Image 1 (cartoon, helix red, strand yellow):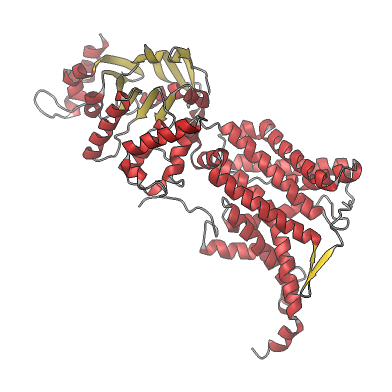
Image 2: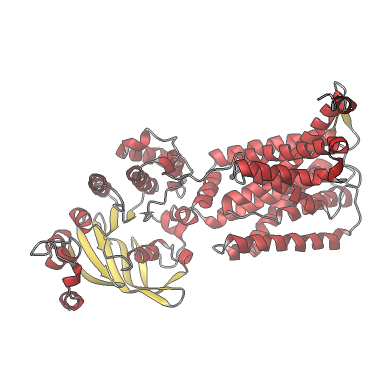
Length: 264
Length: 310
């Protein structure tokens, strides 16, 4: 079963800038799928196409379709998609700084009207993030970066999503916290939520992922099982910074070599 | 001090208390208007100058229901408030919906445009002469310890207290109130949580219209007090909202009361101490107070200072 399907999607900003040129990927039910790519590759744009937030940025899906558990959501508004079982952790955390931790969690459950489910979800989230439980009444903006990221994930889980999207959850966090976040993602996945993990930190993402895709200049240039990608020569060189002869400068790398090995 | 003593004696203690009470009453009317500003600002981040027109329409609609259609007075108030709610919702759908995502400045200019358009519509419908609401409160007075309090002032204070309590509960406990605060803080992140920005904006404008209609009523009571210039009174409530802190209901009410007191007291004492300031220093005084308070607290008395970790 496909939890989330993106088929041949093309996205244009301001009617002129073509950012995605026919991207397809699938998140099978119960799996973690990683999406890798450098800055400007189109990762966040792809997420916006999935969540329906393109409008806010004057962007539009001009071709292709997005489906959630088999139902087409290409043109649905963002609130409807959340109701249908899609939740996201945005890049840069984007918690509501002036609201308390508890209020932030409540906003995550806004699309759910069921009171009992709310209590269950809240208990589950607080069990997963004991740090938050002790600080429910604190102003969210004063939490540390790692705590804010956990709050952002907790807030998304309050919607009890079928599919969870995470946009660079490791950004700006200490290595130890990054490992913690990775473990949490695995834990969330084991409890039945399918995950699409967008990362620049390829090492972290591929350790957790069942399957990975590499996005470059608006195209998927490579995909494969997580462990295979982790061992892949090119991935190791360009995303993990480990060439055969140890670290080396990007200046020495000729771009046509990359095209050649991936484009064919 | 000695030089002042004879002047102070000329303003008696009862006068002072009488003016204090009048100032409180005037202040609570300003507070009602300021609350209308706050709800729109809190949800949309825009200062709604059209609020003045809502106040005006509220006053005239109460007159329309009560005098023209001869409906029960209290029912007329409720109907005028319902009309205010509808007016807010309709304006949001027709005009402001299209401006979502534009710069706040553009939206603010549009609300100023709406203020003048609605002012003229009101004059066209009801004429430019003063109308008499003929409410049952005017003329009735309670006397407590030598201080006279009119029924309409007491009602105005009761309305303000009720609306404030309702606002505080609404923002604190209700889902819609929380959705509004989230949307104001970060509209995109709120959308991502599945909060419908459209519903939030619609309700915010509706509530603004409803509260403004009530404010309009409090200014409309009394003898021949309904006039097209009522819309401009909302501008006097503007410093109340600013010095209260834009996004705080409690701040709006305290700001309103400060402005009311300052205005009333300036009127009382200007005659003796501020002769050099011309004939109407009380119309300028609220703005002077606003400037002084903002110099000390740039985000107002109760406004949310920006939360940022350093």
